[in-house]
Image (cartoon, rainbow, N blue to C red; front, side, top):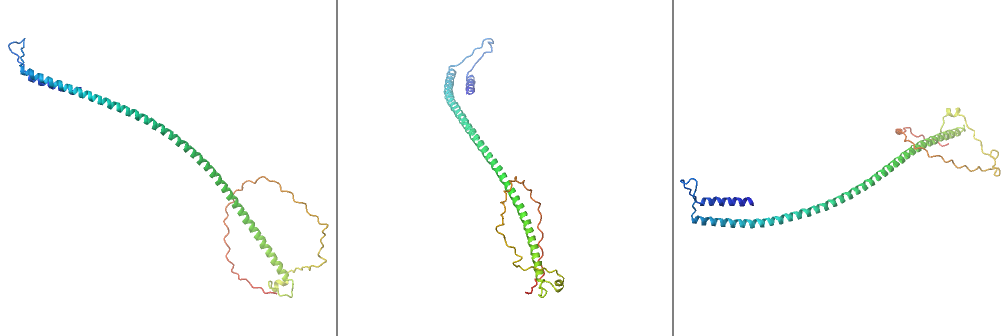
Length: 249
């Protein structure tokens, strides 16, 4: 604003200097005579009046602009203050929310750790029970095989005994043994049950056995290691021998 006023004043002064007519006589070198006519003074006065009015107008505009600028600066400072207050409030709310989220994450982490530990323990227990069940199944399978072997052995002994009993009678046609086997077989003489070979039971002399003592309390057995995997034997091929029909005696 001040620079504009200075430029305007300088331009008006240049105009005034152009309007002035100055005559300097060459004869008087020491004293110069300046003559200014009356119309030129009127023009200069009018120019000065115009400059004065413009300066007054510019001054009033400057004051108005300065007041408006002051109000704008005041509004800007108020807005900045309110923005700083709002920023502090938002920062405080953000810190509170961040702390709440961190606490929730810590709680979730603790719960997940407990669930992981419990799941690991349950998985180990289930694995141990599965191992125990597999061991029991192996033992039961072995026991079943042993019982099956005993049953087969008893069946063979009963079959042999029946064969010997059938071969005891020479006059009867044996449906199992041939003639050569029947002549060379050692016959078993089974006694007939009679009153003489049956001992009477003495009821009064019978003494009951004492009750069995309680079994001792043993410490728990250590955990058994799972047995090595043994593949089952291949199935036996089906028998091609046709069953023979025996003749009833």
